[in-house]
Image (cartoon, rainbow, N blue to C red; front, top):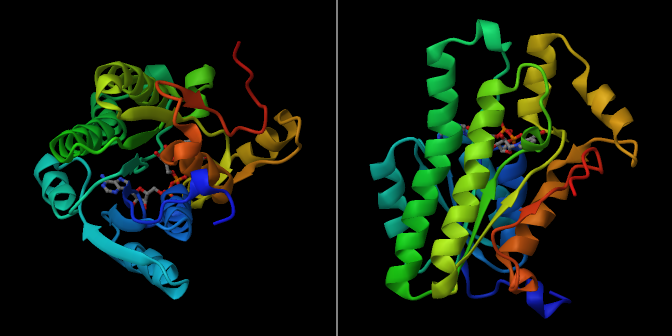
Length: 254
Ligand SMILES: NC(=O)c1ccc[n+]([C@@H]2O[C@H](COP(=O)([O-])OP(=O)(O)OC[C@H]3O[C@@H](n4cnc5c(N)ncnc54)[C@H](O)[C@@H]3O)[C@@H](O)[C@H]2O)c1
């Protein structure tokens, strides 16, 4: 590791959603930076593929087949880490429906996975870090949806806005213990999630989002993984309660 501040040697990271897309890329990059990585997901096959990728490049990976909406499963998995330096709460689902067609069950499902799943991971991580007196880093996964009022984004955007609120509130509560909490809010990233969305909705959002970006492209999972590594590492040691936006410049809040 050329830049010492990004070196995670001797540290342990826990990544939810590690079986696919951004979670997988983050788990692989954190391992490349030297961390032992605990990979958690409900997709068992994808989890093992991620662990194989990490081990193939000489890293250390453990797998936890779990559902992030089950607090007891998360608690057990976090307890299995002897030490916890980094929590990256990445697992999430996409949902799109116009406000007038949104059903209670859609809202409940998206809030449960995308908000409560992140909340449980944050709570378990913060408790473990406090007990171990580790000055750790918690990274949550919000979305560019918090910066726009895109059609269909009620459930998804509301859950991600709640993740932003959780991030800021927890950052203020954990700061005195040296624990940092930050969010990543990616723009359109090419992953199995966005591929499925464009096929299901018969849209070409990827093409549209690429045109919206001053850089003229959409993101790759690795673009977001680098943001996760930055927030996980000592390179961001004076950064907490912030939202980092790898979005190709699509939204520029001021
Ligand atoms: N791809 C994008 O454009 C984009 C943009 C902004 C934010 N995000 C967010 O990034 C995160 C990762 O998205 P992605 O694009 O990599 O999607 P993805 O579908 O490729 O990966 C999501 C992973 O989360 C896991 N998961 C979902 N629900 C789970 C549950 N209840 N318990 C355990 N695991 C569960 C899935 O099995 C999958 O492995 C999500 O939170 C998403 O909202 C993605």
